[in-house]
Amino acid sequence: MIDKKIQQEFDDAKKIVFLTGAGVSTASGIPDYRSKGGLYTNDKSNRPAEYYLSLDCLRDEPKVFYQYEKKNMYYPDAKPNVIHEKQAAFTQQKDATVVTQNIDSLYRKAGTQNLIEFHGNLYNVYCQKCRKKVDYKEYLTSMYHRNCGGILRPDIVLYGEGLNPSAISQSVSAVSNADLIVIVGTSMRVYPFAGLIDYRSANATVLAINEEQLSFSFPFTMIKENAVDFFKDLKVNA
Figure 1 (cartoon, rainbow, N blue to C red):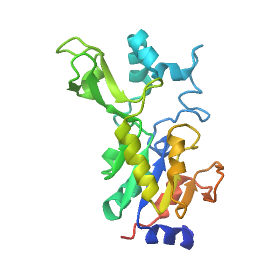
Figure 2: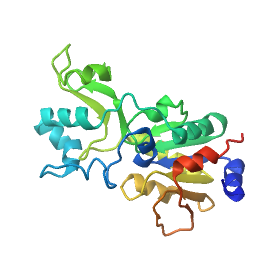
Figure 3: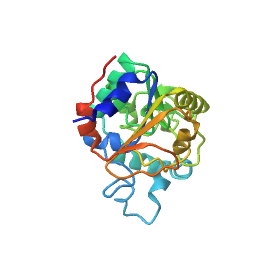
Figure 4: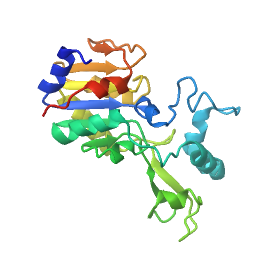
């Protein structure tokens, strides 16, 4: 059961921001990156797993990049879980924004409004040569654009690339104006995403929902619970 005081925080909030990461999508069958059994820890090559998601790999070994993406990153049949759905409901019924590190499109499938995909979206694919957008299904068939022969890529932020300035400014604005900030499914250790919390209002309430303890230098409420269970019980009261 949700603590009454916690439920009241959601009921009373004027502007909510959810800061979310890979842990939100594990219940949908998508592995995260750094936890035991995650994408990075399962890599058996001698290279850092991050290399395969880097601009260097795309530029120097596009076939290696493509094969890694195709094999490890795409889960087109995955469905949103209750965390996505409940947060989407908050964006539909209250003044709420989701700022996510996730690139799996599940928030879109859940009908989330006011969504900021901080690191882009795997299912937005374009040709690096002619810049035209391509259906991701075509990308999963071939790394080459059938119209011009250019190399296709997903519109995600790779290691070695800069973030989308619009995503940064929108995220900072959302966090700075929120009176309730809810951290879910992320350790908040990976920058620059983790730095968003520094833009919070001094009066904002910060909740962290995670099975592992998080640590911050400012007051916050830690809810050590499986986020699926938490969001099943949480009510969206407009």
